[in-house]
Image (cartoon, rainbow, N blue to C red; front, side, top):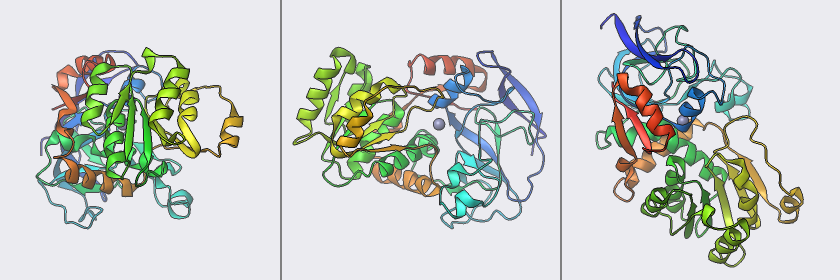
Length: 364
Ligand SMILES: [Zn+2]
């Protein structure tokens, strides 16, 4: 094992990325040292870098990560499915880890919201063991993470977004209670929305409508299972609601999913729904996402409103199995459309923020 490794650090929001070396130490009980194969830039990395959400600095971003096991700490023998783990295995793991069993994990079954839950790519680089973000050569998987071995059939491009983008949308579509024959509207066709269309299809939706202002994303939406795609900026809200409701006969959509991150789309989204429909929030991750709508509409239409943040460990297994089972049906491999080295993270972040690429990958 080499004694040091490289990590790409930013000292404060919007400051340049700098490649720095940090020491590697032997793994401790419950830890796994991974040599990173690929890390992709998630929208939340961009929000952190731009200072829209608090993130400790100087820090190393990146939580959509896969890698090869370099060293297994004591007590780590199997992945969450029960398969044995060995040096050289390619793995993915939960984007978060928890301090230990607690009321939220054991009683409420929402371990992802445990007090003290922390995420990869969300800690100061000075915090032991330095390597806990994706834009680096190495990452220590810390105790109370959930690990999954990756099958050889998956390319790195298909596998890397599984532990954030795909797992999040498994959680969102589960919360939205999408079932056989449902009509589903997806607000935003970024990576989450595209996976959302595909998963809604796999869950049995009979009609999927995707909304996005970017033409190339609407085009991609159709390849990911959307029957109809609309540009919400090309018409006023009244027209948009009319078009969606007419397509979702007889009374509007069964489920509407917000994954665009803009709270101002919520009032139209509520109007898309049929009586008794479900509205699920998955994109408005930034604080102060203030919006004004008529709460009486929720009441009269018997609407269920749900929020999803992080995901349950079971969603990680479901995400991986969904991608493996549907990789010929949907072009997952095309989603990672830009690759950058460790010394190009600034450019990658810029291209991702400007939406020049859908998912930028950092390959150490
Ligand atoms: Zn993410």
